[in-house]
Structure formats: structure tokens, C-alpha cells
Image 1 (spheres, one colour):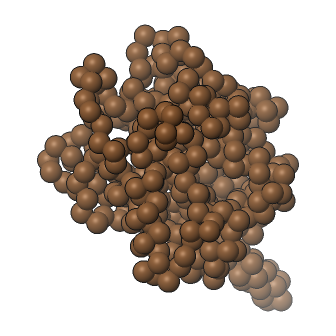
Image 2 (cartoon, rainbow, N blue to C red):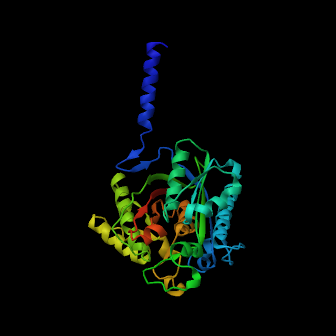
Image 3 (tube, one colour):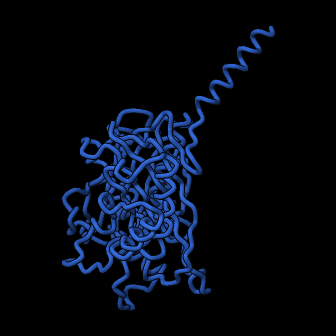
Length: 355
């Protein structure tokens, strides 16, 4: 190879590396080729269908068992229905999806593994507790933006009964719930991402860190997760050099009424007031007064079905030009809780814009 050719190739490689530098600030990414969300689907249970967003969901099932003989199988069916609906809206076959990013709240992600098994799509099983929707969208967006896939799917789910059984008490026990407790959403949200083709695109992400303020009350998830939400929102604003008003909405996953107040206080200490643009999926999905859900909704499905049914349509229509979607998760297990450990939180930020 001639010297001039070697120099030219070296210059092109360096130029390419500079052009592809998409790192923003301390921990964020701004996609040079922002992937589009080309379809979304939401499937929920009866209680969610009776709430304020009831008419916006794709499917409301009256049977909490979803035709199955266990709560865990019911959640798998829930997730399968959501994924099939999203693929149908995108007019794609499972064979056209390169990778699937999915997760749930159950041990070893059994709702996801059994729910999507028959699709034969390569699976990345994810656990971020109730932040899993944000984690799956972030990783899926990275895969599409980098050119590793033409189409990917992201799916998450939760079920009130299966979550109560694993993390708190079996329903038959009939335990009393404190006012700070949230109600796990029975629902699944699924999304299909592609290089182009939609009216909403993921322009950036701020992956979250594990944040632990030492809270040990498993019945007060809002207090456990609020510090992590604060950390991610603050870092997103710093990394992208933005103010809260640069977003039409900053939307957390399931802090509920208790966690929302804590988040406001924590961000004010850092110099940001998000009260005019903040929204929480856990507050939106249920009517606190008529549905007796105490502090609001929670679970992987909470942020996922709210994004699919209410938030994305507003972005697609252009009512909201740019939002920061921040699903929140409490990283506890029955083992860590029973051994007396605290409940750390995590939150992943996803910037979604109209296009």
C-alpha cells in the first residue's frame, strides 16, 4: 500500500472516530443516529382498566389469571400478548426482530423467559426492578443506533399478585398496607425500535447508578427510589447542559405521591425546580381516591404501559416535543430484605423527542 493511501485511510479512521463520539458529560449518550420507536403496545388488568387511562390501553383483561392456573403463568401470558400486539402494529414478524430486551420482577426473570420463549428471538434478559423499561429501551436504542440491528423489541411486565407473593405476603394472608405503600400494576408494555419509520425517537440516554440512602422500609418504595431518580435527572441536566423547562415533561416511573415530594426536595437542594414539568406514571395510572391505591402505582408494568398508552401518543402528535422518561427501580430481594439490608434504588433516563 502506498504511503499516501495509508495516510488517507488513517485520516478517515480518525474522522470517523471523531464523528462517532456520542458521549455526553459524565454518563450520558446523545445518539448521532437516533432510533425511532415505530410501535408500542399496552396490556393491563381489570383494575388498571378502571383507572384514568383505561380507554387508552390496547387490551384490558377482566381475568386476573389471564386464562392460566398460576400468577406467574398469567404474567408470562400478559407479556406475550403485549409483544405480539406491538409486532402486529409494526407489521413485523418475530423473525424480523434481531434482538429482544426484556425483564420483569420475578426470580430469574421467569415471566419473560417463559413469555417470549416461543417467539424464538435472541433475548437479553434484564433486571432493573421497576426501572427495567428504561433499561431495555436504552440498550435497544444503543443496538439500533450502532447498526447492530435493524429492529429490536423491548418488553417489561409486572403482576400485582405475583409481585406480592414474591416480595411481600401472599394475597391469602390479607395483610394491611400502610399509606406509603404503592400498588403493583398488572400490565405489560412492549416497544419496537428501528432506524427510521416513527414519529418519536430516542435521542439520548442517561444510564443510572445504584443510589442507597439507607432506607429499609420495603413498603415505602417511593422513598427508596427518589434519591436515584434525583441523581439521574440531575446528571441528565448537567450532561446535556439543559434546564428542566427544556423538557415538556420529566416523567418518573413509580415514585408515587410520597416519592414525588422527596424528589422535589432533593432536586431543589441541587438547584433545580422541576415541579412545573414533573409527572409520575404511578400517580397517573390510578385514581387515588376511588381506587384505594394509597401512594400510587408501581411495578415494571407501571411506567411501560403509561409510556405506551399515554406518553408516546402525545410525543408522536407533537403535543410534547421532548420528554425525559425516567423509570425508577428498588433493588431489593427477599434475601437482602430478610438479612436486614437497605433498599437501594436505580433510575435510567431516556430522552424521547418528536420527529
